[in-house]
Length: 440
Image 1 (cartoon, rainbow, N blue to C red):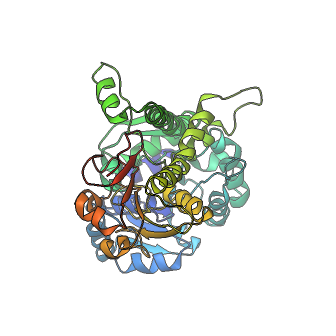
Image 2: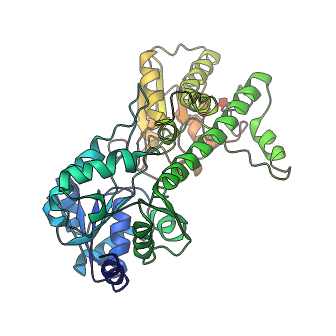
């Protein structure tokens, strides 16, 4: 069974099903179609399915090459989208790329989408099929949830299917590039599953495919994102220290990084997206009861506090301008979590907006990529008492500081969470994360 499937994968004589056509699944589906496979995309969102069937990209923001690749795959008949899991029946390689959030209060994995996908796939799963989970999951999930649930739903045993975990490493704005050029960890529940999955991904990945077991792959993905979260938290804490001492964190960072083997990350207004806010919790989710994590929860607390710190800077800036935050009109520049993207998942801006409204401010939001917040930036700024830069969109980088200040009610207040403007670039009250505070 293994050898037959292996040869079919090499010859591209199998159909590939991709469950979930979001930021992860859609680029994967397009790349396998480009490689010459027949691809079936399964997506519960009927509107998104309709868009994909027309060759229209349902993802906003700048994604170089993806719209063209999707249109080409659909026109060539190599990619089709369905809502019915029955379409998976002819597929002999099935990739699962659904969301795996954590509960906000308990920080425990919320695998509703993953469970639904496995339960819906089970009745249509054929013996001898390779099933790969690309979604990021807590260590132990393949053995403790995926395998037993798929066995129950399908009526098959572990030896009847090949299970592997190959966690994605994509980033909005670089989806195709990362998919093709980033190394991947391929962790099978058995050596046979690992071999099959490596052979499959060779068709679309030019970088290293590192063979491992499933548990190792689970730990690697969650650990690499927890590592980045901790590094950002360190930068943020140094920024807060610099603010309190009257120093400039950007100059501090520049000089720190001149020392060999130092790489201080960028401080900022908060950490968002679907990965960094949750993956540290996923890493810890199945740790034994006697394991007491200290560093990772502390880093999460620092990063979660940054949007609230931005609100404190707004209050301070308005106070310097002789105004109260209650009744003030505040413009938020950027609502996505990442520059030049429409992805609002776990956006720090959402936390800031909620806090400012709690304080009684009137909030105006602008984002050139997020539907509902697009429009003329100048009109949004007009009549506002303060502007808060939350995202480093290219449109904001092109802003003339003097024109920005002129749009705001005097004295203009600018709170910069992404180091977009130099403090003395205009006559304004300027407060930036980790930076000196200026008055006009």
